[in-house]
Image 1 (cartoon, one colour):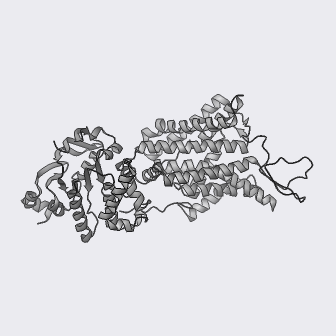
Image 2 (cartoon, one colour):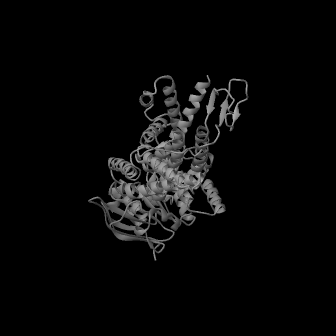
Image 3 (spheres, one colour):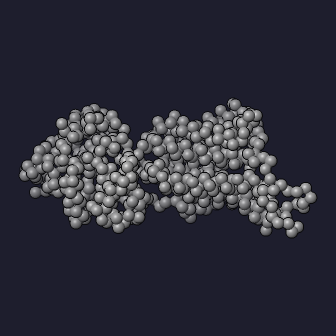
Length: 313
Length: 236
């Protein structure tokens, strides 16, 4: 029972990281109608930035994270301006190929600078006690305390990284939902995603709104990179590609273009992945994830929360 | 000087010359109708005025600025609103949210509130459906919403593209009554219509377009009695 809870919590934690990345995919798709396949590599850049900042002696953890977020935000906006904006009216395939090109560019730049070997990433919560420890010898569950040396082996431990991933992601998702639905800039994003021309007629700066979307998506990717590299403490130039693809699957799973869809899709994906690792096969877990995606798409081609497209003539 | 002055305007879609050197003026307080068959270039003219389509040659002077050199999103705050063809309301958003997007460039909350009340006074049905998503409205209601949304920017001139398209005859009369009311309350109207009879009946002056050129212009009443117009557009 306790091991199931542990797998479930780890799945939710991994899933919240996927959800953060998937939000970037889905928001950019909703606004710019393009699949930004370089999004996964933004995660890698974020990870390396934080890694480099933390390995300098003077930079505290919080500042490293802030630097990572700023670098990714700027990078996302610059990529959009340089690579995608000139293709605003080009066929979708040209944009897709460009995105794949940008992805390889970022990976190879990282290879050039950091080499191909994986580095050990120091968790941002290194040294912190676990969030929750449960013992079976009648002791009360312990929150935020180090396991005492004399204690029997705990039956359930939820690490600080797991706790952070879930909490940070939930806070970000709530904030993002409020931002989109309650602020003027958020409403402008919804308007642009539905009809760019009509949005311009309202006086909305469409290019500015697209930049803002890339900025938010990339900032979320930076946060996800910190959470992911802390939970799975390694970083290499390829770190971003698999989570990027998984998050893309999560976005499609939830219904691409839908913000709550990306959240639900991400968390479900993480849980399915962890549970299949635990109970079926750790080698097959990725295959199972993609199999579930295929089944969902056969049953619901628009994803879980995908909108039916009602085109009025 | 005319409020809106279009001079030797030429527009291309790729190699296709859609507008072939058109010039016309709109004076303050007028209702101007652009009439013509499908593909004559009426919608293209409106899209070029509000910057959705770029012009190749010519100028569009409004408020001392050439709109062909002004970014589309800066034109609303100059006092020009555009009710696009096919209404193009934001169907996922509520009626209220659509209206507030109409006031996107305005800052003063009290004034926005006043405009909202005016819109609700003019279109009571929008108030009833205030929290409904716009996609669930009927065609006529969506047309009212598109007009209300344009009025929320407090425009001095409003461009309307085929407001009667796809509406039942009952709604058509209502929409034309409203256009006249909007004009009486001080807003200049540039109206594009296929329903030439209705358009001429409320307009001061009109221009007749054929394949990207103005072939006829004059007082709306004169055009209504013009034999060629009667034959080609009024079905008499």
